[in-house]
Length: 108
Image 1 (cartoon, rainbow, N blue to C red):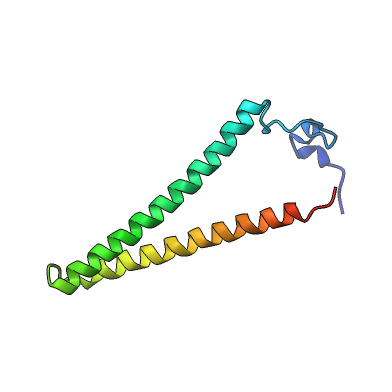
Image 2 (image 1 turned 30 degrees about the vertical axis):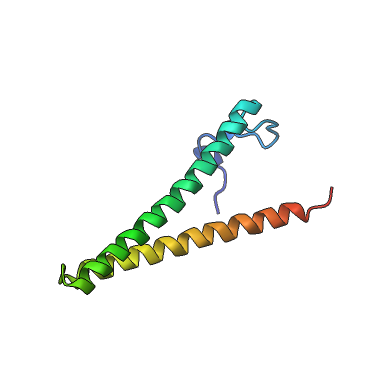
């Protein structure tokens, strides 16, 4: 077994396991606030998107029931999009609540 040619792995000399600062971390309070605001905006966008899908599915259901549309395919697609979006939103909400509970149960 030949293990003499480890230098073939390029770029490892620049990696330091003793790095003290996270280069991706925000530098000041304004950047932290903007990051949290962006997170909240994304969450509200997710809720709005879920609501839009649910409304579209409801519209398609009404059109199909009243006879304005005979396309069952569009109705099923709209309902499936609404269902998947709602499940995803609920999963994100549950993950956030679980993370919050974990943080609140930490002892310092």
